[in-house]
Image (tube, rainbow, N blue to C red):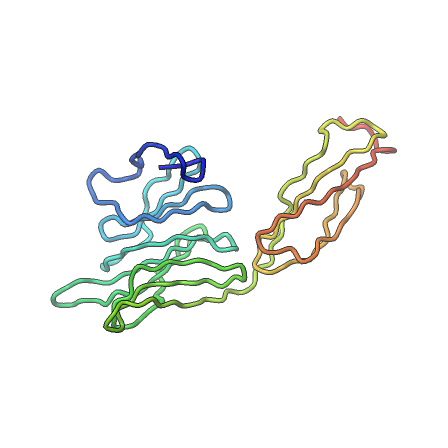
Length: 239
């Protein structure tokens, strides 16, 4: 289901085209990446699967996990360096050789990394959820039965700072420039990294510098518009 008005109205129930007609699909987790694609992960036949929606089509359902454990309860997110993370729990219910359920994760950066184990306790750790905060620290929270009652546990992973700024857009007030007239140009910078950034933005017409401005202490994820005025006097006519 989807909504365009903060939940006041919803689309009809619709079956996803990637959902299997011959196996149970359950326990979904969904997110939108920076490139606007929708990433979906879920459980099928005790393995974690994923698919990506590009705005028109879903990619084929593909496995994140492998091996003989039962993999359940995935949670998906994107970190500030644009990598996709999935955390889940995995164990094995067996009368002869049970494997305690622990928390695992895998990272997509063009392909999925081998699963990495977060917890190793002999108790059952399950149903994880993960986020990355504005400072770049990854939080994983889960349920555990390490005491007579189920409790909430967490672990933190402080990643190395990522410095990454981009020019998000360049928009002139008029796409057709008349010689000897002035044109206003809005340049929007964006901080894709994990730290506050201070940097200089320079605007050129071919190899001629139009102007430059400093951006001070831009927060991670923040957009910052900068206005330039281009005086076209003396420029050669373009084609």
